[in-house]
Image (cartoon, rainbow, N blue to C red; front, side, top):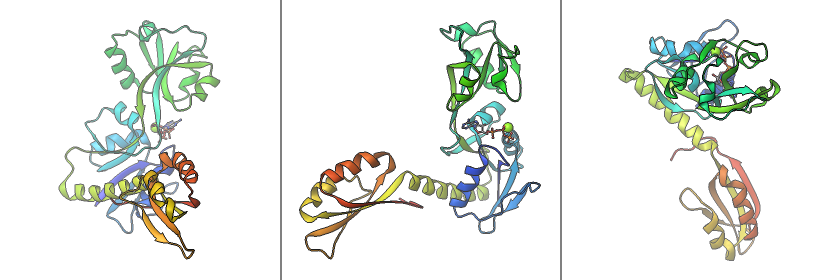
Length: 284
Ligand code: ATP
Ligand code: MG
């Protein structure tokens, strides 16, 4: 049995539960008071916790693995390892100063008071840059600190920057990037490691599938070679004759990133009736 700690409610919870369900793991969501549930078709126990408690819980072996923002993992400073980067809840931790302040470089922070919920990460940044600044730890609404005279500048999570802007701040130093990560102990027992590997295999299949699309198109036979040359398939495209003479159907798998660029290219080369279909799982 593997025990996984996930965020009970917050920015990580929906995508975390969705990911587990996409992996075919069936369980009942944690209700308001439900902190623990067992998957019905996979040897997994799920604990629903506040994200701040997840690294410690994994370190204490109450849970074997956890899904948490990399920022929280770093802040807690436990000797844990990242088993997989999950690609959601992307954000960065940045220094932001009031808009009117002329900021040149990190040395300008000397002598200032910095409000943050991430004192450990901030301390390591300040020490690395030999900056002497005062850290004022607060747990929420960090962005209002300069406005109410609690601090001169802040160090906080930024994703789009719109919260900073609406509080009269500007981002001046990006200190670390973060995304949701699967964390685990470095010395996980062999039987648990086996279950984790099964789960990771499923997660990677789901993630790979999300990055690709299945594409079908029709084309006259004399254009097939040209079309196949621009279709970056997994191996090589499947070509099947249509009922209509001299026409074929071409099937392939392409990266979502290359998608629009290739569609234009294919149309220009004579492809018609192009269908693009999501892929649920992909095992290479
Ligand atoms: P909890 O109640 O569990 O302690 P919380 O309020 O501390 O939750 P959330 O706001 O739910 O935390 O954020 C969880 C994680 O999501 C953060 O630690 C960070 O990794 C990521 N995150 C936070 N804000 C954003 C954002 N604006 N955009 C993208 N990801 C974010
Ligand atoms: Mg939290």
